[in-house]
Length: 338
Ligand code: 5GP
Ligand code: MN
Image (cartoon, rainbow, N blue to C red; front, side):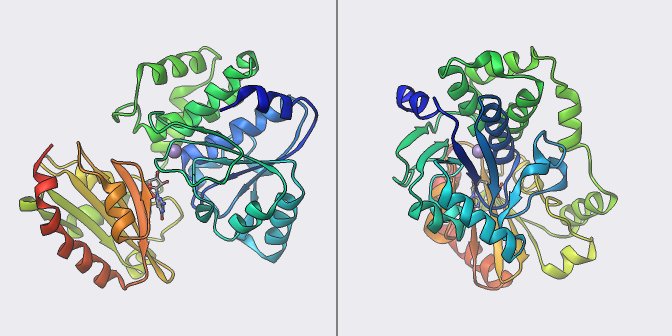
């Protein structure tokens, strides 16, 4: 990242749009809202636009009420497209391919705005004039903290900004346990906690706020829907639309469910298949050297990180699961090795 160039770009008040990927997670929303709050403090006009909605357990985040959800209706779509078209700067956070923001990607690429990428996913598509792309970073939130610090504004990180950043770092590191958690991650978190931000409350709001039906969906998934292949060190859960409906599925209710598949001792690959509209949405997680980013890219039109990736399929749920099962023998060697 050329901070000098970014600093001069931000020297005058600008119209800024912040975008993040579809079905935003804690890191996507945390990084977007933290950056928005920071840039507003610096005197800019800022709009956060998400391509789709996101789970209720993220709605408490400071600045949430001003987010524009692009795909809500024709009005929000037109507004989002107009704002991206008229912006001086468009930030792209927690994604690295314009396809990840659906239809809005085209408008972003056509916009005369300077595009600034801040992201930690591998193999970025080259569409931004300025980029802070670091695959070793735990999260985009950690990179936003680095960006604010590098611009000389660490003192502007107040409790609200810290709460947003803590949310993304905590969720993307699986509460500080994934390999991406570095000494720097902990140093950043230490400085966030020093603002007086309520980290226990944030953990509770994100992880201990299940509805009863979500808890029962978890129970059903583990008791009746978990399929284990000990010979391939793999396990998966699949959920049809009817099953999700039966448990009154709400956005975010299956968040973290895939972790139970790979939490079993000896299992190195976990998958979750969910019927969503015309698509099957897939989550992959792995332990050790097995690369689910590659698996998702090659076979399920997706991507992500080495140990956490996702994708989708236009086949039926059954066919998608069959395709996954049929692939397992070809990955047997990779799944054996740690
Ligand atoms: P999750 O399983 O939590 O939805 O996603 C895990 C990781 O995979 C995230 O880093 C996310 O950005 C990435 N990911 C999920 N779905 C997709 C997808 O459809 N395409 C791509 N390129 N990445 C995805
Ligand atoms: Mn992330």
